[in-house]
Image 1 (cartoon, rainbow, N blue to C red):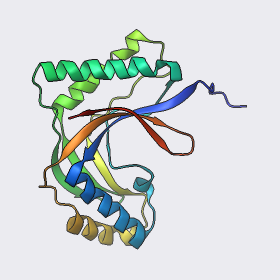
Image 2: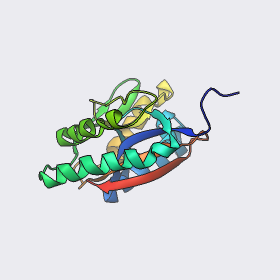
Image 3: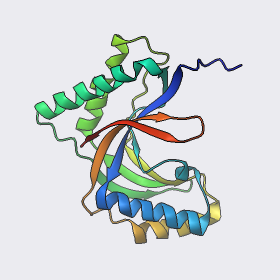
Image 4: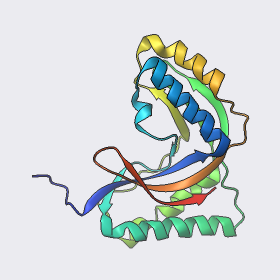
Length: 184
């Protein structure tokens, strides 16, 4: 018998690329899977994690959406740019990705985290400070340089990059439900 109630589920807040930039990333993921097999980054859609996973009652979904909507609306009303800048492609021995910058977006998530005061939550929201988009990790060591070359050849970090703020429900079968999105 599971200790997690059937009425609870896992949630997370992501910023996800859209448009031409997302198309480049999707092309990279398709090619890397075909040429070098699956790595952990393939389990997710291209994204920048803004909170860690958290468990909450399904009944609390409207409260979380309302809190994100309020934080988003306040940022827009204050004319805060919620853009994300790609700082650089980074290639380490065990991780490849894009390092990102978005200070106002981080503040929006801090404002959203005030939802903890409004509802009974099961675990504290973990806010992410290092903004990045993972391209590959937990890959075979012999694929390190090949994956790097594929990323450099496929992904143009200078292309216009559009993003959406998204509130996701993660299902036990690793499928995802986007419950609400906001254009950044």
